[in-house]
Figure 1 (cartoon, rainbow, N blue to C red):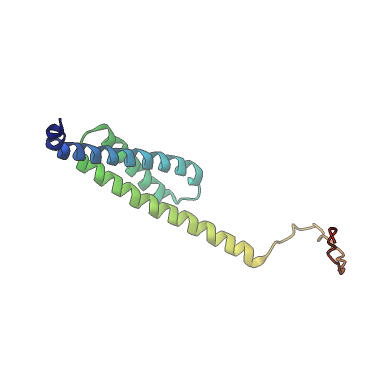
Figure 2 (cartoon, rainbow, N blue to C red):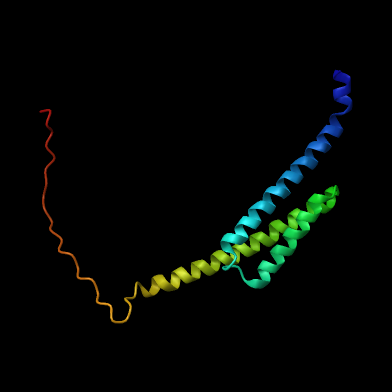
Length: 130
């Protein structure tokens, strides 16, 4: 039995690698689908189309048993998704910076809120056990 295990160790290792690649591809495809729903409007249309094409290629590669094709599709999807999210977050960061630079602007006709009166006072901590 030990000899059988040793004889098939290489086959088992190759099978395990194939399963791990399939799991990575499936997990990334799910993550990208979810991310496209969340960030879809923040990703430029051309980037989104590239990501969707890579996602479709990965899904097709998962249906077949070609490990080389699956690896290539997985790497392509990783790269495309990384580029797309980078652009989305850069655009979001730029929008935040422009709104922060100007500060909060009241709507026209809206009165500014009066400043609250602040009262400063000294206090002393009393230890009740003494």
